Image (cartoon, rainbow, N blue to C red; front, side, top):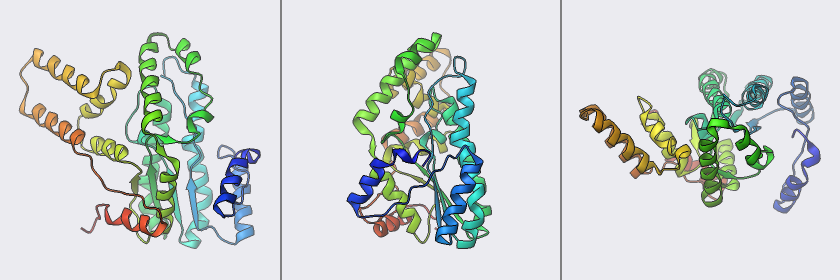
Length: 311
């Protein structure tokens, strides 16, 4: 933990749950802190079986009006911090045949308006881990990424974000930022996933015999990923995210795009195909994972509902 002095809430929750936690200082942007933490754990316990990359920091802003120092700081925590810690623990995970789990985000798959720096970092983490996974597996280390959507935790609060100050600095992007903030506030208030649900999935990954590389933690996250992975020309994602900064509903935004296209020229069969694919993806939620209350059941369900490469 970067500041162990803030661990009171964690310690209280652990005591209530009847578990023991060992809180040690760790700043993922400080190589010396990483080395000290990893070496002390191995020295005290003799081995390192699993590592969870969970450090992260929110950052909202669009690049024309953003502070490049803040952009670089965002990348340091969300990407280079992951890289540095992963590099430090891999020798110990190889020795133990351990597991490396990294919390990324739907923002590592879907580029989200007013989140260029944050999404850039999370996209980079996804590519880094996807590239590392088969290499690490050749030495007995299993790598997975966990992709939450909106989760009810202190992530946004800890960002120290001042909406009014940021709107005042947004210039020509103030309207788009206001619409985005309205959407985010509504999403977190009405449908944020309990953090405990995300934790159940992470624990299940730790103990499962076989694990997928990529795991989403909610239906919304799975639908978003499904949209991206079938979006050859990028139009489905743009249709999904443009309403976040216009205040329109996705259907309104899609209808406006279709009407504008029709006014210019006839719709081609290829465009009609993509329209139908978009409607199908929005209308048919893909249910792949269900977290259960116990670790063993969660692990079994995660793997049994995930498409296997040998199926």
